[in-house]
Amino acid sequence: QVQLVESGGGLVQAGGSLRLSCAASGRTFSSTAMGWFRQAPGKEREFVANINYSGASAYYADSVKGRFTISRDNAKNTVYLQMNSLKPEDTAVYYCAAKMTIATMTARPSWYDYWGQGTQVTVSS
Image (cartoon, rainbow, N blue to C red; front, side):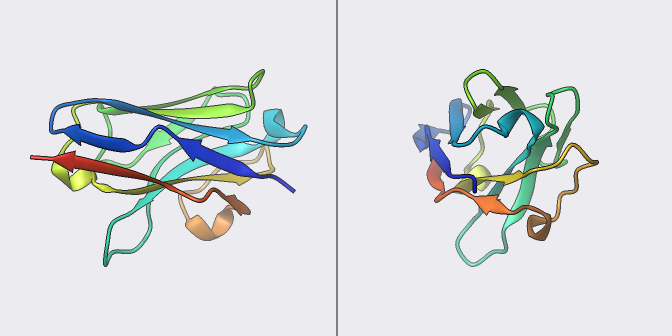
């Protein structure tokens, strides 16, 4: 069982930055793929970024590529999402997700086994 707790959301002006954190419980974090997803009101949950168990591979949605960076610290059981040049369309609840695997990752929400409670990010224009 893995528990995930997100933090770092808030209100920011367009062009600003935020860093989200997701702290994971358990002893298997270093063999767990992690992902960030977001869901805006009335929309489906969408993939933002993921990172493999070692941090050697990371993938991004086209909408955030070049602006967001996913990283992880296995010593702290934490994954981060640095968000720069934020836009109003980035407004959503952001969720972190985990899959206990060292296999190739996917961007499908259904692939992930564990989810956090979400943190709200609001970008004002």
